[in-house]
Structure formats: structure tokens, C-alpha cells
Length: 139
Image 1 (cartoon, rainbow, N blue to C red):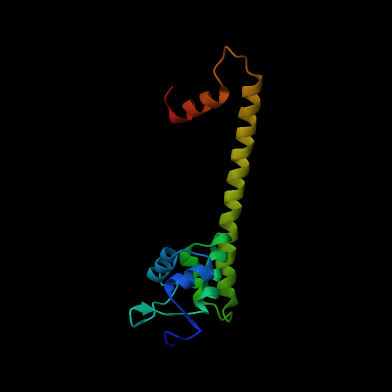
Image 2 (spheres, one colour):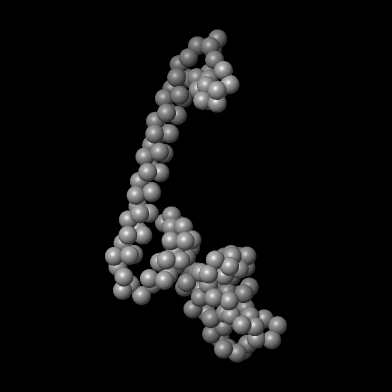
């Protein structure tokens, strides 16, 4: 690639094309998710194709994958090792299931506390505050 090549971008243009910040690209490089091209003159030039890789990383993050898991998925990108890919996705799915269960428990508890607060006499402590104070052991 040359500096005039339409297939290359500076880091700023790559960031804009991918919809991320320059710092994100540098961070992904530090984590080994993106290559660090050699300098050509005063600027590094990145292949346009890296925008697709950045989109892959961002989409995987949206699905809850960690950067470590994304690194592994990129290593398996050719799709030949489907059992390894399924294992990573299944593990992530299990973690999401646990988070959903925790969120449902939290939702149930808060709904109950809000209802109690609504129906508790004004001369008594608010059940929400009382519950939080009790949980901290300040009583």
C-alpha cells in the first residue's frame, strides 16, 4: 500500500469509517485485536478492510463477549473450528443467563420495596432506605 492508495486509511480516517475513536483503535492494537502497520512516511496506513474487523469486534462486544473471547473468536474466524466457537458462545450464553436471573431477582426485590414504601405509614421509616441501611450493617 502506498500513501495515495485508495485501499489505505490513516488512523483518523479508519476510526471515522468504523465509527470509533482513534483511542479505541490504539487500544485494540495494544490488545492484539488489530495489527499495527508499519509507518510510510510520517503516517501509518491501515487497510480499509480493517473497518469490517472493527465492526466485528464492536458487534461481539454488544453481544457481551469480552475482548479475550473476541481475540479467540478472531483466531477462529475461518469457521473451521465450530466446536470451539460454540463453546465460547455457549459459555457467554450461560453468563448472560446468570445476569438475567440476577436482574430478575433485583427487579422483584425493588418492586416489592417500592410497593411497601407506597403503603407504609408516613411515621415509619421508608422500607427502601431501611432495607439498604440493614444491608450495609449500619443498624
